[in-house]
Length: 88
Image 1 (cartoon, one colour):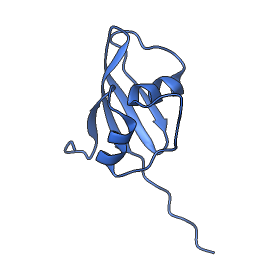
Image 2 (cartoon, helix red, strand yellow):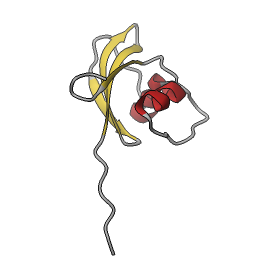
Image 3 (cartoon, rainbow, N blue to C red):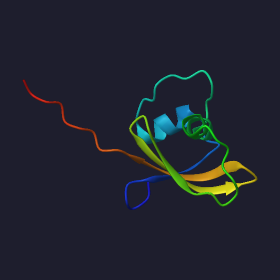
Image 4 (cartoon, one colour):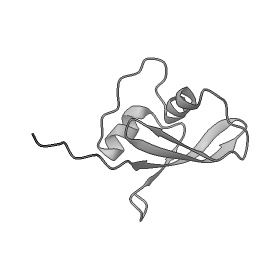
């Protein structure tokens, strides 16, 4: 992890490896199996070289840091704070 508690992760990382590294469980998806696939599914557009943007999905904040040849090369991933369950 980075000092701020985030992780720098390749866009090519398999989601199962991301889950293991962050000790989380993401919803099952059949359409894709990489972090880039998750990001592209959410944004529904292919990034351009130099693009930097942020996606909030499945309890994660994913900042795209580096795009090369329309490929997501580097991301910074952090866990979004979870809201405490309300007591009855």
